[in-house]
Amino acid sequence: MQVDWERLKEEIKPMQEQLGREHIAFYSQYDPDADQYIYSPHGLIFSEEAVAQADGKSGLILYEIQNSESKHLNKLVLIHAPISRQAIDEMRIWARGSGSSSGQQNARTSFMSNSIDGGSDFDCGDYASWVDGMGCVHDEEIIVTPEDDWMDDPFFEDESLDEEDDGGGFYPPQPGETDCEVAYNCNPDGGGVNPGPDPDACPIGEVKDADGNCIEGEVPCVGNPIKNPRIAPQEVSGVNGGQFGPTRSGGEQFHNGIDIENEVGSPFFAMHGGKVVSVGYEPEGIGYFVTIQSFINGEYYTHQYGHLQKDGRPANDTNINAGTVIGIQGLSGNLGGAVDRGYTVPHTHIVLRKRIGSGWNLKNDYSAPQNPLEIMTTQFDSQGNPVPSTDC
Image 1 (cartoon, rainbow, N blue to C red):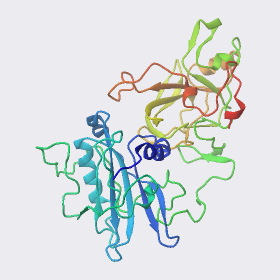
Image 2 (cartoon, rainbow, N blue to C red):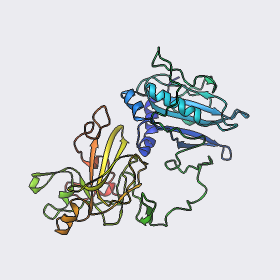
Image 3 (cartoon, helix red, strand yellow):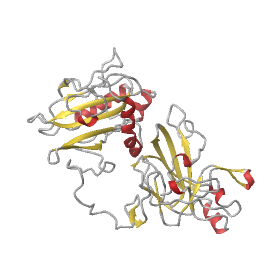
């Protein structure tokens, strides 16, 4: 039984990028009214310890939850997980607390591949319709009951799994809980498409900031910080001076980011989903800022946004989506004086760094600043003009 690994990796990429992390879980929830499966992300998040122990190794787990009376498959879950003892402990903790409502859970099918990059067999299960066309051969189920060990430990031959549930920085979902904030039109009651508008939603033409206030603004396309972004010009070096690289003082001064023009008081959005890893203030530099860690095209990056206002920023450790308001345009740091002297216009300074180390230290394990256009949707030519085919 073989799976098309390349196709499977492509299938999960959009959700990895939307959630901003490499290791994800998502499920197919059966909708009996529509007689189809609804696909949504699940709230399984691995701790940093579990990821660090894996040292870059990852694998797949598939399991089933059946209705105890009808035996109909109620839910199929696929998890792209780090391969480590801590990760396995966390998955077992999560499995004990997830999907156990009355009449819902009868059996599980489970299997882990040696590596998502390898050619290992992948057990599809009898009802794996959501991977139809990926080369799976349906075969007899491997059933483990809730009373049995949910998963044997194939990586540590002489060590038994720790039964103690101490959390380990992992926050297991409650029974029936889903990540509806990041699902595709998901209904928290399990009915698929959400039947109506959010009564707390802002009026058309407004968005919510991190404090829950409705402010004027429009959510941009994924990969852009605002709709139709433009480079903020410099008095001497013009639009090119707001780009990344040796763009100022006749090429003598290096600009470590990109400046996106924005009116004071207007919202600024996360270009990609991820986790807020730093919220702070640099009085002589970028002022009030927010730094987000995201998993993009198979790599981890941090994208930092500066010259914001103090209020309206998300808290540290917040998980956010692309298009989430991460700040309000301000004049903090050295920008206020520059604008007063006519050197530039109000803008947000964006700095991009790529993870190159084995740890997660924002200083030691990430590269020097790179061109933020690497992860932006709208691209600019050498003169700072937007490329029409990319502008949104």
